[in-house]
Length: 383
Image (cartoon, rainbow, N blue to C red; front, top):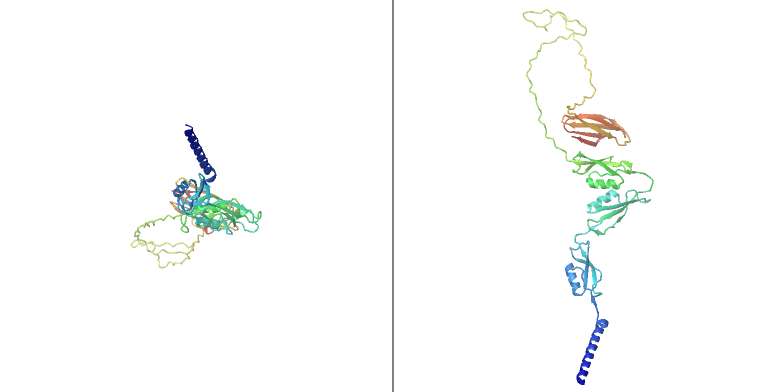
């Protein structure tokens, strides 16, 4: 019995010693760190599986990249380094899509910079204008992001624009946006501290429909900062089919070709005996002399012809217009076209700042056009 008891105690001691050795090995000897595998270039599913096999887990973060979608482009812990089991490894995963290289717009005018960004498929972000003693007004000083960084098309590009020497002038030139699409033209004008007050359509073959034909005031005119600018947007001209010309048949009218005597001014016409057998009130006796008279020259009418009147329709077009600032008087011509035809309402010289107010009847629908100098600067339609 004592012998059996002794063996039992020895076995229990052996078990306790073995358990202690295993615990010591697990706590102090065995290495619990694992090597982080290489994950860049793998798909997100492959990278997650590789980390799981190593006793690690993944935390993906989607970013813009030119790599295909769901491909790992960066891992926070480099491949080959040690990490404790159970740790989380941050991964950058591509959203997909190509990147656009930002053009360098520094040193060029703002309008040209906007065109360059639009041509590259980028969008204009915030614009900050600051005084600069070295850069002329409107020149780009800096941009963010800088060129040639690659970004996606939805990225906004911020610009720092020079105002020139502060306080020298409170006027800005109206930018030349002829031929630009309406949206781009609005952006350029607003970034030049001006406001697009209104737009009007104008038939034109010079530019594509939807593009700017001209502005009011004209491009290059210096106006106060914050002034309003009107855009004239081109529309395709309406082709009018030729109308047939109505002709009135000429009737044969028998005319009396008998000669008519011409007497001198103040002469008394003679008494002419009438031959009852061959009566002719225009036959003169041979004894009566015929005195030739000078035919008076009709006076030349130098007055301009009166414009045709519009048919009575109960409609009245009201026009209110102010001539823009001018350095000298220019020819002003105002025409209205309706179902009765085209009529000239005014044709004269106009001075800058002059206010024009007129009312005229019209039939059907009408279109009033104002031409100042050689350009049509205003067009209004009435229904």
